[in-house]
Image (tube, rainbow, N blue to C red):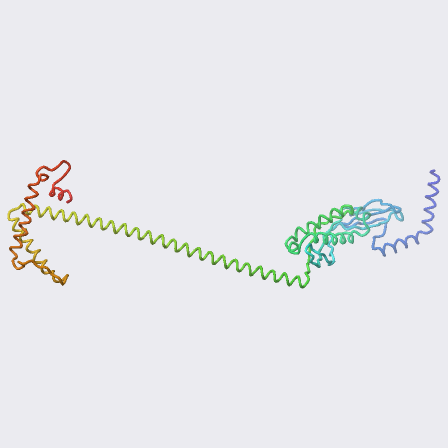
Length: 351
């Protein structure tokens, strides 16, 4: 068996020596047409790139960045995968919302190759596959939303598309980092309806704000009138209280003054010539009363002896003497009850 292997190896070596230049040219033309690097035995792999190597048509290994050595004619670089983040423009497509509105939407997709082996052998064209998946997922997600929610829930729509792409692209060794909707084109008639809706909403807000302002104004006016009435009633009550207190104080002052005057009159009457003084005072009051009769009324009633002032004074003094004697002869004046005072004592107490 070892001999058979040796003979096969020798035949392969002789064939490579005979057809070496022709095979080399074929490999060079293939690499140039496909854009893949050619096996030059010593290779330098750039950073953030993964080169998938096949040995005799079967996956062998993935070259790491830096220096790598391959066997000529046996090893071939089959795929070159970039490990950088890739940006893919998703073409514009039509989608129908839940309320039967046709939209034209395009977006941007951000990808990264996480597993070069799966990205090379899991799918024929990873970028095309992910783009188609993004379009179909976008149409599916838009069919679940109404037109108003498409504009309001844009972020949640992007997240849903990213989750759906990652579930399918996990077998392809690709991860979708994010998806962004660029433009949403609405039909002209729908755009006009939306504009009318916006204007109506703004007019509604203006009317609501105006009504709220009117209500607040009415409330403020009512509150002001209420406070004004309360303050006016409190001021009136305070005025009445002050007026009543003033009248009470005035009545007390008048009563005290009258009591003091009566006490003084009583003391004066007990003095010598008190009756003469009382007669003089009554005569003066009589004359003053007659001097004011014609000023207050046109109807005047006069006694028959108007010119006899002395008789009038004598009559008044007689009335006074009679009242005084009656008070002195009354039992209450002679023996005042317990807890009661005479008129003079009451006057003194009031003073």
